[in-house]
Length: 116
Image: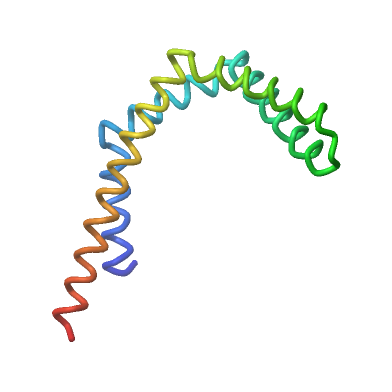
């Protein structure tokens, strides 16, 4: 294993232990275990796909009906406290990964510029 691979492995292990990553993983597991929520998500996606199809074949009334049903389900999903919590924890984890990526990019660019 190269030094790069070892360092990358260490970074992955540290990230897996970070509070925001663990919180996201925990809420994601809870969300995946809610059959009613999963059913709503599945139905919303099906209506969204129907709407796209109806729009392509120029069935405007069918498109509008499918789009409205999808929008209603999406609103119901988004207003559930567990989904709000899921999104907040997802944002925290995403912010952490964005910060780390930015710092790595800056460090690499600095090393490359000093190496010239």
